[in-house]
Amino acid sequence: MSSSGKTALILTGGGARAAYQVGVLQALQHIRQEAGESRRSNPFQIISGTSAGAINGLALACRADHYDLAVRAMVEVWRDFRSEQVYRADSFGVIRSGAKWLSLFSLGWALARWRRARPRSLLDNEPLRHFLPDLFRIDRLPKLMAEGHLDAVAISASSYTTGEHVTFYDSARPIEPWARSQRLSVCAPLSIDHLMASSAIPFVFPAIQLEVDGRPHYFGDGAMRQAAPISPAIHLGADRILVIGAGRLHEPPAPRQAVVEYPNLAQIAGHAMSSIFLDALAVDIERLQRVNKTLALLNAEQRAVSQLRPVEVLVIAPSQRIDDIAARHLWALPPAVRAMLRAVGVYGRGKTARGSALASYLLFESSFTRELMHLGFTDALAKRDEVCAFFGWGARASEAQRMAELAHMADALL
Image (cartoon, rainbow, N blue to C red; front, top):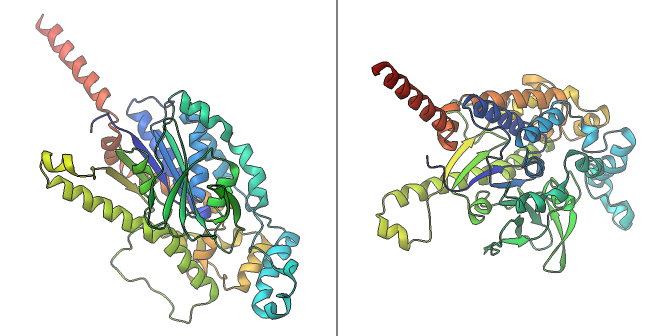
């Protein structure tokens, strides 16, 4: 692979599932070190994130001048995560938001006349707003881009106001905003509010107000209506893209054993979440691969007049079902949250668990995040050769070794 061109990192959404991404990033550092490459420099000129992936992406971007420390800090945070750092998990906090919200199912007709009684979300994620500034300094981004450590950063969110998918981005050099059907981009200094909006899981966390062209919009999770997750990185100039998912993109051919019963509310919600966070990414990857194959069939003149260009892509996604992993850790949820989720159908443990898909997005507990990090680490190591070929790692070390062998042979001849 040529060392020219820009490499982008795309981190998808998925709530607590994003711990998997940190394990992958840790493994990439390990592979990089073994290949003899510098661990301090940032291997990604463009970083694009959605939902919890946007938070991980900004954690990397805001320390792009010392990349290995950025990864190390992320590992320390996710290894010892607690739900209380993301949302109110105490009994009083859950009653104020979740219990009141659930009561609308039975008493909505009585509560509708009092606007104050209308809760905004299942959980209150105000603790996350206070926690994020401790993770990284977002105000460092302009300086890091000016110094050449980073070319561009993008965060995606979905407007409840207009139904459009919006990508907020900042870049070292001017990049013309792009617009497609139901998708648009906005060049703006990124803030904590952008992260809160991008990670506002529908129903679970409250919407966040942001301005677009001087007009206020309410935004929710960026994975909603995200028809082309890879598109922002390409518009920002990426020639190679590493995508780290937070859920299985392809199921094995063998059918899963399952108890056939009418799905409860939690199972339906978990299925909807998987559709939001996974389906668009798998389709977009297949679309990019088809474009690459089509361009490979064209001659140089035909490619020159085409508006398309080949973009190399490497995908690392979980080799195991995260739903099944979450089923083993339902016990780790705070008691008040566990009781609230049980009301909508999350219960059991292991193979008998129900609603674990929904719970997996809220399981910000160390027992769960550590297992996902371990899975991400091993999945990335299993793709060691692909990773090295993608980045070109080890090429310089191999060349140096070859030159040393030639020098040794010359000495022997003399």
